[in-house]
Every structure is written in C-alpha cells, then in structure tokens.
Image (cartoon, rainbow, N blue to C red; front, side):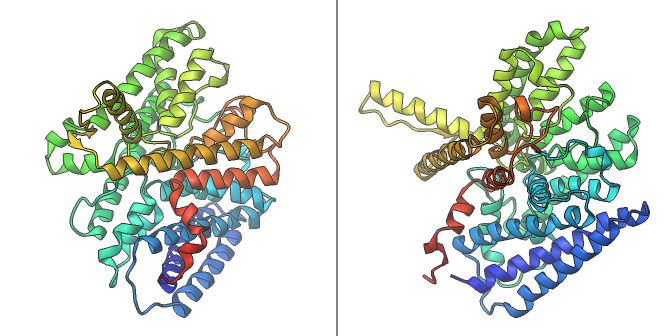
Length: 482
C-alpha cells in the first residue's frame, strides 16, 4: 500500500481547510468579533499539520488504487472534523471539545444535528463556519480538491477517491478526465448556490442569512441560524428553500446532461421519476393528514411539502414541530429518513437507486420462484444491473442495518425513551439531523453524554461515507503493503 501517498493527500486536504477557514476569519474581522483569534490559531495549526504531512511524507509514487482511495477519504474527513472543531472550542462559545467535534462532524457530514439549545448566541464568524461546513461536505472536500489542485501522476486513479467519497452505489465520470468532472460538478454547485442566494435576497432575507441558508440548503445540511429553524420566515422564502432542497436531492449528473442538451437520458431516468413520485405522494398524504391543524389548505400543503422534501433530502430544516403531527404523518417522515435522495446528489440516506435495485431484485427472485427456469433481469434506467452491483447492495444493506442497530443499542445506555434513541440513531446514520421526541426539531442532542455523542459522530461519518471506507480503514489487512 502507498502509505506516503495516503498521508500526503491528507495533508493537502488539511492545507485546503486552512485556506477555507480564511472565509469565516474574514467575516469575524469585518464584524469585529473576538473569535477572529480562534480562527487564526486554528489556521496556524492546520498549516503546521498540513505542511508536516506534505513535506516529510512526499511520495515518489503518486498512484492511487482503491485501497488508498478509501483510506484517504477516511483520514481526510477525520482530520477535517478534528481540526475544524477548534474554532468553536478556542473561542469558548462551545466550551466542550466533544460538543464542538459533534457540531463539526454534523456540519461536514451535512447531518444538521446540533448540541446548541440557543444557536442565536453564536458569533457571526462561527455561524458562517458552521453553515459553510455543510457546503464543503455536501459535494465532498476531496472532490473540491481535485477540482482546484493540479494533479500529478495520479490523475488516472483519482476516480477511486471520487468513488469513495461521492454518495450512491455507482459513481462515474461525466467526461474522460476526473479533474474535469470535479470542476463541472462544482461549477453547477456554485451556480445553484448563487441563484438561491439571489432568490432569498429578493424575498427580503438579509444577505448574510441568505448566504448561510444557501450553504445549508444546497449542501442538504440543515443547520439553522434561528431558534425556530425556518418557521419565522415568509411563505415565499419557505417555498424557495423547498424547491432548492428538492433540486439538490437530484443526481447532479442530470444537470450536466441538461446543460449539454442531452434531454433523453434525463427524461428516461427512472431514479428521478421515482424520487419525484415519492415526494408527490408523500406530500399529498401529509397535506390531507395535517389539514385540520392549519387554517388553510395552502398552509397545510406548504408545511407538508417542506417537511417531506427536507426529510427525504436529509436536509433537516423545519417550518413547524412535526413531532406534534398525527401518527400517519410521523410514520411517513420516518420512512423517508431511510430512503434519502438520488445517487450523486448531496443528500444522504440509502438513496432512491438502492431502493429501486432492492425491490427489482426482490421482484426477480419472486418471479424465479414461480418460474424456476426463467432468467430474471433487474433493470435500472433501462440498463441491466450488473450482478456485482446486486452483490454489493446485499453487503451494504447488511452493514447498514447491523451498524445502525449497534448505534441504537449503545444509545440505549442513556436514560431516554425508545422513540428518542431509535430516531436519533436513524437520523444521524442517514444524515437527517432532527429525529423525534427529545431530539425532535424543537430540541437538540445536548442532553446526550459525551460517549453517546461520539457514537453519534461515528454514525454520521458512517452514513456520509457510506460505511465501506471507515470499515476498511480499521481493518488491519488494509494497512499491509500487499
């Protein structure tokens, strides 16, 4: 294994984090906040760490294979979170490092679970950094690095990094060069963010708040900057956020196809239509179920559409406390926590493509029981699913449910009820954020012990990186030279 390349690339990521920390430092300086010192000291530590790794562990061979790709992704995300938590801790605004680490992991993994009971007391620089971590983690920081840092010698193998970091069962290149693919994805991402900022400003939201909400929405993270999340904003602003949550739950590859006017593959995308269909049906069900709770049908539709889109895209914003809704509505939202958005989007969860593949495989096996001599085929987007993809799905689902149950059992050591602990495990593993009961949208994760918060941090990282990179990183065989 090329260990030097693993640590060298991790060092590059930490140096990139130092550069990204300049943005919240500038915000703190503009507003004359004391936390500017915390950002400056963190940048210094990032520079020292990154330079040590890149200077002393510079590899001669820069080829990256699958094993190195998984390790780079795991170590980079851990390093980003460990160092990214320091501004919260050094400033004293989050006095516990474990709490600061939880908040940072929740940010980078676009989970949106928070330990803050009163987010509005944070300084503007820290609010910016908190929401900015969503935007960085949404598309993936290693994808960002591939887009802006010239590659040398490993360009042909960079797809292994992208596959390890990008969500979904299959990741491919839009164009032959991986770096160009990363550039295209980030250009689309930046344009969507900028358009959303403009629309929010048109609705009367201040520029600073518009920018932070755009970061959290396009990254499908959901960190609010108000105690009531999105509830206090106008219906227009809530609809804008709803639409962009929906758009960011779509596979970004489809936007590229639209840009090059290749409309047929987009229109034939079964995952896209399934995703939109789930949202439409769920919204209708919730609108009818919560209709007695609101004065008008339009208000019921707005709240239903917002919460359905927020949960299925694993954004986690809220316009109301849906924990007070009827059981049917809560049941639908709970199921949507598992489904998630499309592969290749910034959303978490199992992904719609995996759900489709799972049901397609079940239908094929049932058909074989009735017709033993038949040769069943599973199709996705009109293409035959490879047997390896179905085998990988079985492995992923086994690990997914086993680890989620393990997280739940560890949380049961806490003095909380079943609904709280189970929804916390499901929500953090699927990168949704709020759960139900004591961790609902009107509450926080502050009451959990330090141990449980670290367990939930592991759940968030497992969910965002889709398990395999972290499992392989702790496997002794991964670190062998063979």
